[in-house]
Image 1 (cartoon, rainbow, N blue to C red):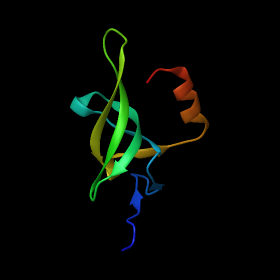
Image 2 (image 1 turned 90 degrees about the vertical axis):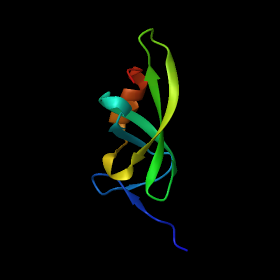
Image 3 (image 1 turned 60 degrees about the vertical axis):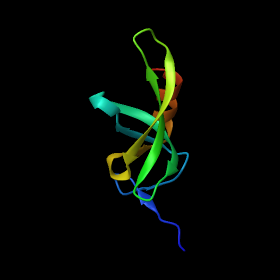
Image 4 (image 1 turned 90 degrees about the horizontal axis):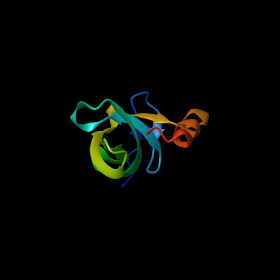
Length: 85
């Protein structure tokens, strides 16, 4: 059995461990997350939520692969270093 290849919104290959931008649950805009695993049709993404007190919790959500865009390179590094996620 061949392994299924998943492609993001821009038709680029994505794998477990890649960072993606995706629509957040409950209409909270766009979020940055890390792909944890793939299901047959979707993927599980881990992301950080900040509450009104500034506490950060990690959550996971299931998103369709076609809703996400892979991010990498210097832009991703600077965003992660800024701590604004």
